[in-house]
Length: 182
Image (cartoon, rainbow, N blue to C red):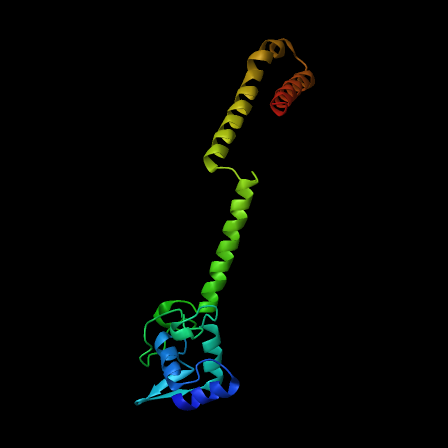
């Protein structure tokens, strides 16, 4: 169907874009593109089912355009000029408006969640965590290394391997308890 027939089709369905000029704007804005529209010579050929779907997906109905018309904001302002864009992409390589809005909405939700957790003290800075991890590792190291001078003389006097093992285990547990107590 041509531009005027498609505009009449939209008018009959009660949709926006009820003039051939509106349809031309939708094509030039990238809201309608191949395969829903194609150029044959000087005329446009429009598949109404695909075009209606693309119009809905690529038009932001919450925006108000010039002269009070709704839904003139699109994903691209580059004209179609009869060339099909890459598959699954709007004109100019941008994703369709609905996909862009979903991505933005997910990003905003994730940022709000992170800000809430930060205010609620569920998140801390990476630098602070690294300092605390380093201090904890240093404490563990110092506690383990402190066992050697404390028990070396006692262990040298022992000959029973089971007694040596028991004594070492006891000292390791003392060091670990001291660590867990803070």
